[in-house]
Length: 433
Image (cartoon, rainbow, N blue to C red; front, side, top):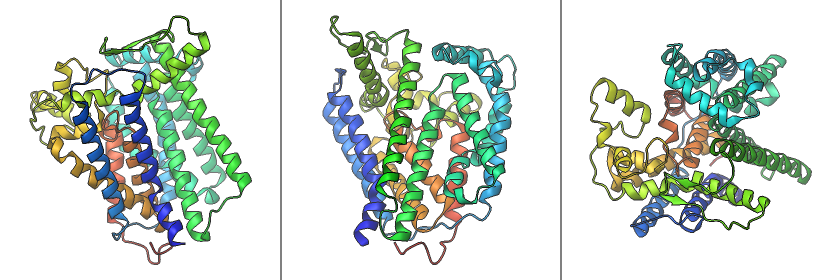
């Protein structure tokens, strides 16, 4: 039993390190030959940062963690589902200039849907985008809990709850399709998979063994493979549509380009495109990191980790704040901060400098491991949400500081973090950790 609990407690950490290690390997050994001047420094920094993540996560296993079941979970669930469905209508109109029932018109060309969204955002003809953004942010703590709370409490769902769940999922998918973006479906996949991990872990703790039969594992595995490949296919299809085909392409206007043989068969050409696109999507941020590591530090006063905070502060108070960030510096070096990524670590470094980034990641790892422990052993729904948000942050670490980029995701995370930290530990917990 102790070995089982230790393995279960460390499972997200091993999966996270495996994923981040794979993205680093793609960067250094993948299909692109990046023009690095400081490859050793980049690799050393990344190894130290991953070590800090592992150390913080491991330390959480020896700490007393808050968390208890949320009595009012159904109210939060229903408010979130209703808000998600209602906000779909003004959101799609503001972001795309169309209404949700026009979704069939964008299914055949996601590239065109994305371009139309960009034009609609630039025009802002309705003039209500800021109000819709504020409404989405205020509803975000409740909207984000719909999927996790439904999975964690699925035995308690009524018919009304199921209908609201279907409406919420439909709203998420329609919004994603109307905008031609991958963020919504990606977050949906992470929240579903992460919550099922929590549910399976809780069952394993109660029974003292793996709770599912080989048949159930096989079916679940098959469904997971289908879901992953469907998401991957949609991702590749959207990228191909945006780029006008699966031919050779360059990143950042020629910083690095793909290399293929003209004699490649169409199928091989498409597979190469898929690998190149995955590599560009999952690993390009490390090149932005390499450029930032060559620049001097000028503090952004605790606001540079968030695009939302930095842009609004620059508009209202001090427009020089952005120029002090590492994002501005890599932009001047030829790596666009709007079209390319520079990793989560670069955003954090704008506030504290690169030497202190591992310390921030250590704290993040501690909260990540503590939230997972709270979700498993204390049955905390709030802990589950904190775990899911931080899992999302780990997955996006090679790209940007995803959790703090928009007001809705930032506010939702802070909301549930304070709820979780304010909870007293329920005694007795599911098992003694």
